Image (cartoon, rainbow over all chains, first blue to last red; front, side, top):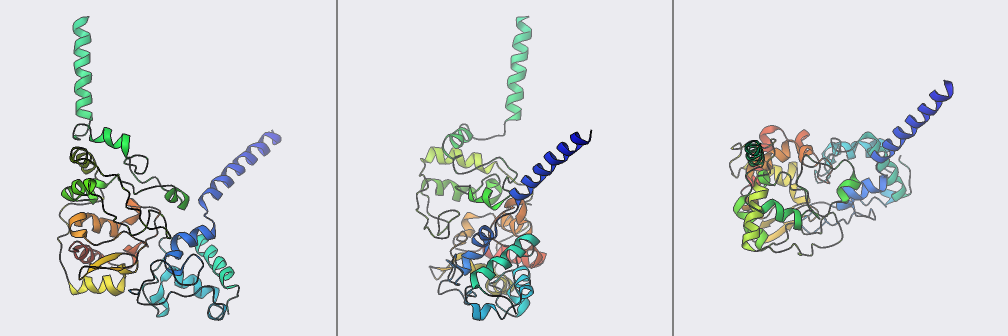
Length: 120
Length: 217
């Protein structure tokens, strides 16, 4: 009986684990899909939308001197609530009603890799 | 016995006729043969992950009859011009402008088929095209649509390139669909690179913005 239970629990666990990982997108995929259109695939702030009509310069996410001034909580906040939440341009929109908490956390870590820096 | 068989056959034929939506003859068949490699028409939305969205070669069309204007669609299928500056799902490749060009007959039949594909999210008659100072401010500043979408300013394409162009929206899009899309974007595109603006714009903002975009030449 106990062996049956263990096998059942293992199978169920593997199934749920597989389903969970299928839903959770990799941070790079999330970044490339949502953020790269303005911040660029390389993170330097020169995405395809940044033409002469673009009214602001998207943050260069690879600039450690700029990015280390921001805490991880600052990054979470601006991703979720957009530029106006820190008195910056609304061209950085709010993604809080689009991204999951895990996706936002993944992005914060990915951005820290791009800048190779820690938050203040 | 023969009478019974005939009766059953006629009954079955009547059932098929009443169960089949009123597409123009052949439009759905032409679509299935030529278009399903890039577009799907059996809604609701199927995409659950970014990978699902990236696997698509073209936009979903299961609500095409609510989204497009019929005359525009029939004309565009015969002479397709890029709506997106970039290739679908790409941030690096230009739109190759290689959408197949259809004959007038096929375009009319497919248009009839697509215009039969409606979404219950779209309520008819809610939005009348109109400009307003409020909407211009939303478009330019509060929810800067031009960051990702081009529009025509004095005949020149102006704005971002990742989204579909809004130039010519007055002829292409159903104003009621624009509003429904802003109000409940997830119902149409659960996975897309456009933010959900329903939590930033109130209903009045959404309505005036939709009415404004619906004036775009």
